[in-house]
Image (cartoon, rainbow, N blue to C red; front, side):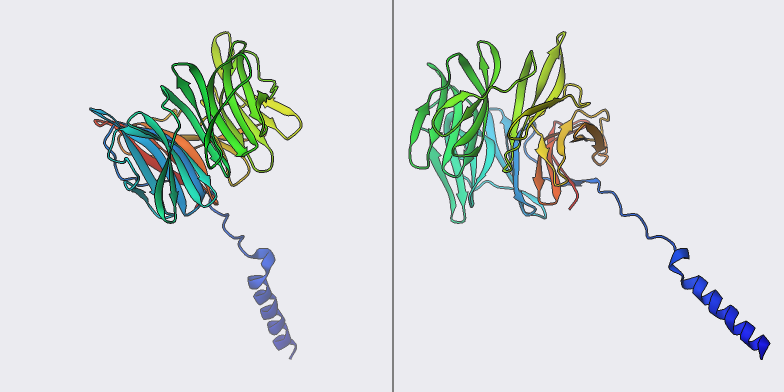
Length: 355
């Protein structure tokens, strides 16, 4: 009897050892998200990418133009959550010109369109396309932004700087502070909160529209610097990206505004052009950077004072991979740009992180 009891006890201990959580193998670590290539229907190379914007994981738009023998040809692509497809249904798709910035305005999508030298705003709704003509033709169309209740187009004509404002019904021309020579870019959070970066007779200056007038925002930009972009967020946070010149050599800086004060940092980005910068789903700033690998794209992630880098997928026979624009698409990041394969001209590429 004692011998049988001993055998049973040993079996119980052995079984407990086999199933004990303390000795079970730990679960495999979750795979770190990586960049993947998204096929894009080829355009007529060479091509130039203008902008990329997403409303969520199932809708993104990319704009630009092809370089044809008789001039630029507008180029529009749509991401539907599964694939990129070219859209040629908009007015003027078969005329020379180019497409610029993309903006989501309520349920509509707006794009700036240079149509044979004449500016207009394309609007796409559930019922189709329409166009809002500009009140005058400009020599240059520098930038465009739109929010519910307002839109701005900035550029120049033969009399100088022009700021055209649309309130949803009519166009007016707005004035800027004395000393402003040229507006290099414009963006807006609301109809009564727009920002612009300007070339003035004292250097680069940031302007702000408060619903009544454009005024100097008194941003303490670094000395001898310029501005590439301003990223506005619904929370009230603003981030400026640009270059500061030290002994003639540029270095990238970022300035963040929390609603009260500005904080300037110099992340390890060399002289990266920050126009493609976006706020990622992880809360960090992401931007495409110049790659040190000819066959792979490269992206920077800036989280406070920490900068890390990741590479896109390897592309066979590629000699230059250039993501130009980056945007958040729900839980993912989308990029759009160009890739040059050995023996051919640059054509379109897109990549995704996550999803």
